Image (cartoon, rainbow, N blue to C red):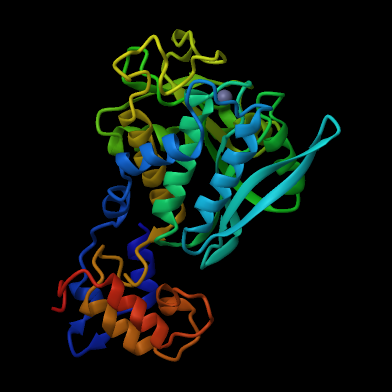
Length: 362
Ligand SMILES: [Zn+2]
């Protein structure tokens, strides 16, 4: 849908390689972008940055601030993100949500949130909610490499366990902003039986609930969606209770996990001597579904892939030539990767880095 729209706006550009609109195929880039999700990297983000081992404490213990700062630093390594520690007050103390903003290239005032709480109940919180936090980082890692037409805020919320405090503060801070929807995850890594995910949300959020359900079926590699109805026990509720569509995804039978909110909610849970307390394929496949939903929903394409055919090739170079020196609007926006407002040699260098092969030179 998006590709054909932009193709119409762009018209048919005649170049030495022919008419681009005519030769470009209609392959959506979703699969290409979804395949960027990497279970090994997800596992690294979870295990090495979030202190999810026996004895760790991301509640009010020393690992809370260490994990928060790791999340901040990890977001800061990703391209195109503006990262901040966003303060709020709770119980007389200052805490921080970690926010990373990817500004939309076409509709920057339209904001989507991808979020999860990183705090725990004074335990390692490997499942609750290291797994959701790592999903947000992995989705950010993948999508920040591409061009988003609309703004995405990747959010690691604090103090969920004390009553959704961080997400509530975030919503209160953004009452004048156009938040379209919020997609959240909370406890997504312990496989209690069915290889499936519950999707919670009210009728307000039906379109997005159906969207993530379809995306899990399409991109989840065997993961099954289950529509679980409305719920008020996770951060999505801070949005829904203020009229903003939102959902939370939670493992199908989280009540079957006797270890959450205990000291054994840990990667090295002693009741799982084989080390399989968490099944990392579950959150990785859910991350694929989140990415797929975002690509299908909000208009995300490969940088430099101006004809949206999922290849960066000579056809795109022709557009780069046409756009060279131009104001990066309209059909040229995909090339201003360094966001300096002009298409120049730096963008040409970036194009060369992105080049995927000769492709559709027609
Ligand atoms: Zn939780």
